[in-house]
Length: 510
Ligand SMILES: Nc1ncnc2c1ncn2[C@@H]1O[C@H](COP(=O)(O)OP(=O)(O)O)[C@@H](O)[C@H]1O
Ligand SMILES: [Mg+2]
Image 1 (tube, helix red, strand yellow):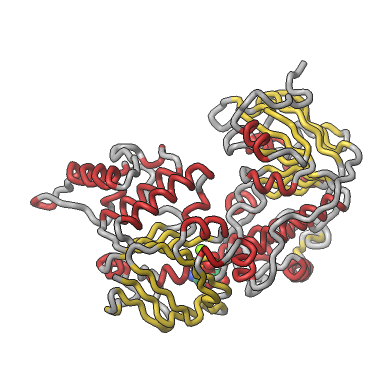
Image 2 (cartoon, protein in one colour):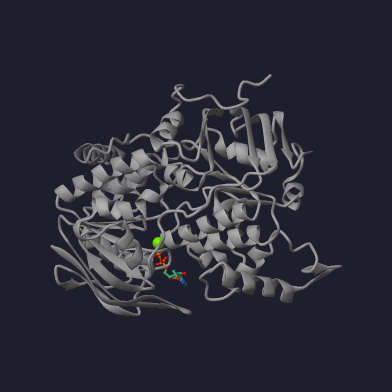
């Protein structure tokens, strides 16, 4: 049994997303499709799944061509897809979601929920998915929702399963569990396409790695023949620096000082419980921690997006505890928010509009009651060039850019002025190595030009690579403080709340 894509080309207005692509997947084989954001991976898989009609080319299952542009036929041919953004209905139970669109009926068209639940149970136990058929979908962690999508695909008898960036929403532990599931599918004879931009994952999981760059498949390799450096080079088209290059920090005056800060989360629980920390000019302080230990709320409190309940925040000696987000922004604070699509960008706006999002009301773009779009346009053109934003034009909607390029739009907007403090949350989440290298080097440049930099990341590797000092948060408190040369193991232990680490300065409070 094989699935084969032959000479697939897809032309979007202005973008050749797929350019004569060939790919085969056999049963019991895991093929990793590796490529930077925007390389054309999702487009290719959407063609395979019948969501897009290709400009030319064909898809064959066991040598039989499919009518392209018909998901129903793709499903009939045994092709299943787990999308990058899940397509589940939050207020449905697991079983309801699984049978949605493929409802088993009893006589007279009655829905057979009992049979649906039984099927979910069977599939769940066959592949060790551990999913409760009666659970309400919205209550489930993302990792489990993903398994619901997998059950949905298996329930439709898929012989080939496509996963589009499945690990980008998972924690390191969940990734291991996910890999076990995929290996189980392989053992059962399924052919797998695993889309990723993470080099280590492709090396670990795949039998074969196909690399796409700018719409073309540029290489096909075996994991045993390559290492991460080689893969990165094939992906980006030039050698990539996988480690961050920086000199010893030269810390100056304290710029940001947080003292005994208390803040609640959206459920009114104390998410930040007496946190104190300083960030000096010319240093990068990294906040490490498993997601959900108060980091998000801490950053929101510092940037004025969340009210604090106690404690104080000063910026260059001035109390900003109760300042508005705009007032804080105006005091030369750059903020790269955690969720670029929710709070960093306005997706249905153009690149230009997003670039001036925080300055449209100021001179020179706004003078009196007049908007000067030519000024905005000029700034956007300059930043697109300077920050290497890959976009057809500055009039393109940011919704149509890849994640890495969306992130560069935010970084460009935030860094293109004299800032004293940079706060960057998950600065490289879900983006490709080329963009990661670029954004990391811009962050180090900010430090070297004298800014104080606070980084929050749930990727420990990123914290270790960038930080001059590391603060670990656990359950709303500072659980440890380390210098940049600390071992990953020590920091990792503190992230789990191990009390065996040196206590941080000033966490005790008055
Ligand atoms: N519906 C669309 N209309 C126009 N351009 C698109 C559309 N979908 C994707 N593109 C463009 O096609 C290219 C490939 O995108 P995509 O397949 O999503 O890449 P990947 O999944 O590798 O990140 C990108 O330049 C993207 O902006
Ligand atoms: Mg994609």
